[in-house]
Image (cartoon, rainbow, N blue to C red; front, top):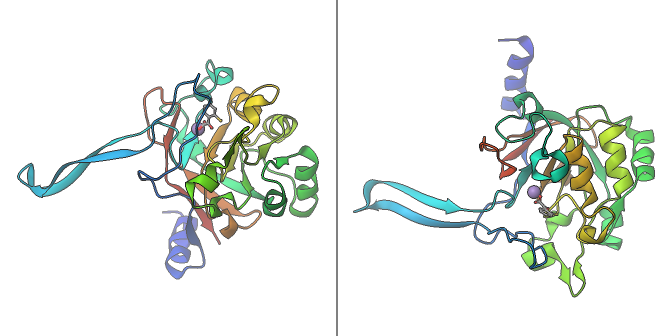
Length: 258
Ligand code: 23J
Ligand code: MN
């Protein structure tokens, strides 16, 4: 074993490196995105018991689960969007595993989002962040800290008003910049999806999905505990299920912080 891996285990044991869970609990109350009714709906999580130490299985407990691929804390693969449909290694079973581990840059927009739930990250905001924290390295996750995950009531989390959902996201120019000028691994957000609540009405519709996935980049949605991460220096492990031709999957997202 390399010296570095030995030291990693030592530091995990001593707590000088911590594992932070960036995942929401996945259950029947997990909020799911609601699109206009002309589109297909993604079912939330449901479960039923096969056996629980009973006549159907005297010594064992197990269940059947049903859920949309994009439920709860989950990973978006490039094949999720039409712009990424013909890219190489674009689905859950073909993404190189090396890409499931990467450094994170955390941009704190919690004050801006508290003042304006429709806050959109701009290129200027990112460049200002970089003057303090350095340039976002290629291959890094860009995590948008909004403290939106503090909204543990699903009604407040989805924040659907008469004119649709209101939640923060990215300006199209910013998604384009992050994908092309910074070559990020992808973007992660605390909201239900990687586009803003109002993004169905943007040009193009859902610009973050359109631009990120068109560039072979990934998404992480419904993250939490981003307030426990430093602006730079943490490592994110985001490992979706290896669903054949899968567009996305719930995943346990962990960060190493030290
Ligand atoms: C389909 C259409 C629009 C959106 C989404 C899915 C997601 O947010 C998702 O989970 O990928 S905005
Ligand atoms: Mn998704």
